Image (cartoon, rainbow, N blue to C red; front, side, top):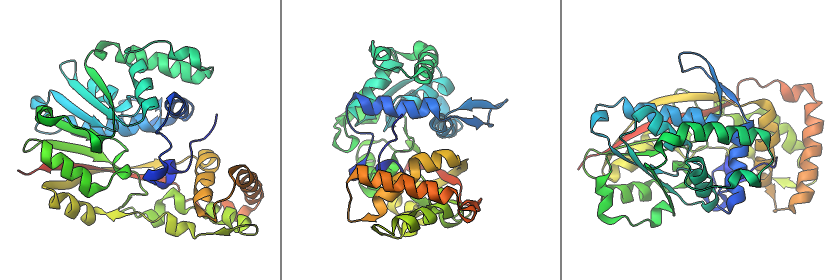
Amino acid sequence: MDSLDNGAYTGDSKKNPYVGDLGTGIEYDQLEANLKVIDQTSSRPLITSPARIGAKKVVKNLFESKHFSKIKRILDIGSGTGISALEIFLQGGTHLNVDCVEMSEGMCEVAKYKFHQTVGLSGKVKDKNLLKYWKEFRQESAPYSSQARFINQDFMKLDLENSFYEYDAVTAVQVMHWFDLEKIFGKLRSNLKKETPVIWDSASHFYDDKEFPSAQYGFRYNDFMGFVLDEISKKFEVEDYKQLSRPKYNQEDIKNITNSQGFKTEKIGLWLQPVDFQDFVRDIVPAIVREAVIPKTEKQELNIVTQEAIAKSIQNPKALLDTTHKYDIVPIFKSRKLK
């Protein structure tokens, strides 16, 4: 299984690895099918994927709001392969209709397959875990297949005109860090009716929490990263990875930016997702290395050097002592249009 490229972990919207043909959607779900974590928020622990847990938490906050009984039509921004849409239906019920906007053609096609709106996708893959994941997902989504609409378009270029006013709520799961906050909330302000709630979360490279600061807990600051780059710096010039990992905003920034666009925003939740060290080494370290090396180097050559640096660092006991920087820090926000 190949790993997703740079933008997955660095937040560079110009390098968004999910935008592309069918292969990108399949690859994303391969990660979902093969990367399992334990969800302890249910009545009993469940083995699931990080994306599923994140979607569940965002949607749970939507349906716990006082507006729950009024919610019938939902706009899901950056809907990916349909994970957040399924959670909306499972928690909200069969009376809902969800419009899912996703700019990646590949992600959108996979989502349609998972909601029984297209066929034949399973014949394109051999990964048994992925096929099992899709089968189980399609069993869950079957009752809602006609109530989800998938729109393959960049949200910032989307023109739904007056139909925007039909939405009773907006969700955005792990996607806001790909947008300019001021611009996307400006677009929402111009099109949503008053009091419409927008429930969203963000990746930890986007947001620095006061209680759990990224520099103290964030996985991208793990000392192992420094040891790897020290090895790589013997052959290439590298940037300071801690500067690359610095989050863009804090809570006050987000409040001020969204308020300037007519929304009141509050942080309504935060969860710490432990990042498995094996996944960190396999997927995240190479992605950050590609961003840190100056000048940009031929990918195959850099991959070889990176793997050599990782192998050498793993043998160094000092490189494995950091047990604090191991979390993806994920805040959940509620933004409400004021007028």
